[in-house]
Length: 189
Image (cartoon, rainbow, N blue to C red):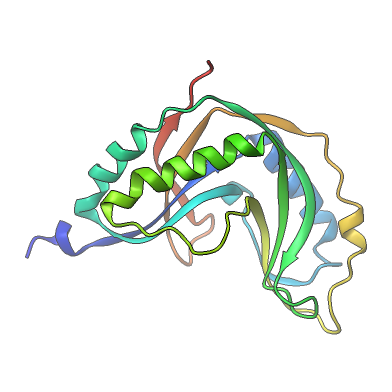
């Protein structure tokens, strides 16, 4: 059997963040790591907004996936950081994240179009509603619950224009762990 037919890569589609936004998140994380004891903090190069998790993908499907994603034709849109929150029970949250604000209808349209383009290739969308966010840390390691005080200290006037999205490959146990393997521009109409 051909190796390309058996080799698989772990993939997802995302909106990358500009360096200024990554820097802002990195500074906030550094200032709050001791107050927010999570086991694994996201490497600054790995900050992104997931559009669709694709999972383990055969290499022989990769070119068709890249072609499908290149068919997405949507305009650029503006985003900004919003608030910090968690997923999971308050006493032991799984994920620390920041939400985004701005042109969320356009971000939602991009998500839907990506899902529409990948579905014919066998990629299944998640059952839960789309909640755009940027993962900052995983697996709470503290005792007695989470101190929410640093959340109120999260302030950002940082805005940016999302002018492209990317196809990312995951390299488990690496840091940074995500590699861009495809870049897809949005139009400035």
